[in-house]
Image 1 (cartoon, helix red, strand yellow):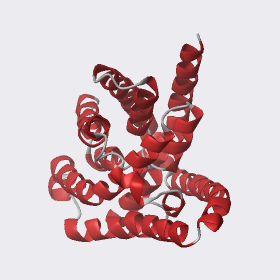
Image 2 (cartoon, rainbow, N blue to C red):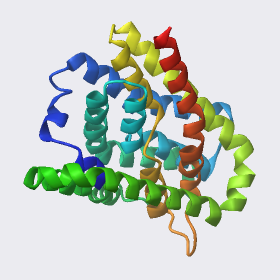
Image 3 (tube, rainbow, N blue to C red):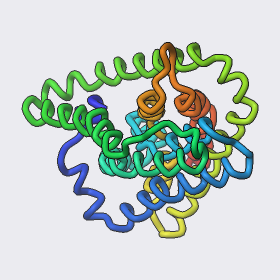
Image 4 (spheres, rainbow, N blue to C red):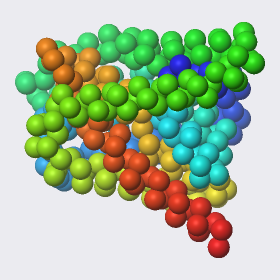
Length: 272
């Protein structure tokens, strides 16, 4: 999140407000349709309890630096991608705790651990808004340093991201194996459906190809690290990571196998 903030300016937050159609389509796909599609998939595939809640946490997460990098690879609208990530990261401070609380009541019932939505909202603020704000402050005070350090910061965050994913899978390997046959297809289905819905809906609203692929990538790629962190905050085991974090861990690996072929297909289609 600090790396994200390092590349942001205040205009990245106001850009979407000045582009109401882009704002509407992006917000609808990522904040309303994505959780709804996740809920439908969970219900149809019979996923229950903690894994179901973990899926809903994942679907409520904002995008991240990864979505910005893949948008750039796809020759999409990188500025729009950054604006989506910035705005939705802030909105998720409010939406993620609410969706998580409702999901725990629905899927876990009386087995759900106590959840203080206000406390989770404040925690979301400290793990998203604060590091983003510090990154933006560094850029505003010393732009040359921010420009020179941004590439290094991205590499560091990528390494840390990989360590987190490997740690999540290693600590809950048995749970991962036991749930992969059900969880894997569900996550693949979620990514594919969201890429298609977001890309198609953007075309319906007559957005450019660059904007359409950007909305698709932002809707198909979520910040798995935030999902893992939130899952571990709610159910914090003595060792390893929470079962609520497993969907985000699995997703963080599978998304590359789905999104990158989609991007290469898109680039090849444009070149024809």
